[in-house]
Image (cartoon, protein in one colour):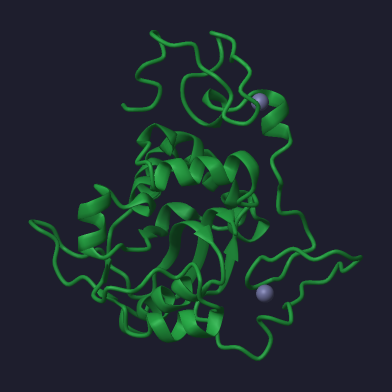
Length: 250
Ligand SMILES: [Zn+2]
Ligand SMILES: [Zn+2]
């Protein structure tokens, strides 16, 4: 219960505009961190967007379409959904969560992540039979950071929704930071970086064959990481479907 642990001691301020939040504002979730105007002003990913990568496009397209970036490219995941752009307070909160290790933001970011489940393609599914799987961190990086941000989001979303979660992937290769690389270089950098975990201490690997997976990450940028993870889940574990959900889109 890190979420809002110091509420009684300090007045809380909005992470967007720094106004004081009223004492009666909720103590967990996105409402605990953003005033209502800032929450309303978050940049949402609005339709029409690419049927595969979720990138929004301007224009009157009403039919499902694949963007030029996804056309003619083999993409291992079925589609990716995020409801928010990694801009303004969303970007700032993700940054604080990940790099300043501010775990108290987990509830707020999980609320943003949860909105991905409103996608009509997911709303129709019985998600209780699906599995939440985090994008893994290399053990060294997890040790240094103290936690895997994607796993923290998975766990929180699992307790909000009842969808089971398990860390079935591992990162076996240290990859250099991806931020400065283009998509092509990212893919080359990541090839073979992920594998299935074969054992859990004291537990069995959950059934993956024929299963539908929600692959969870904090931000989707080029989709290269998600593609590599989905490849392992589909080819090695024979998962039926892999849908990527993220708190935000880069
Ligand atoms: Zn505000
Ligand atoms: Zn696309």
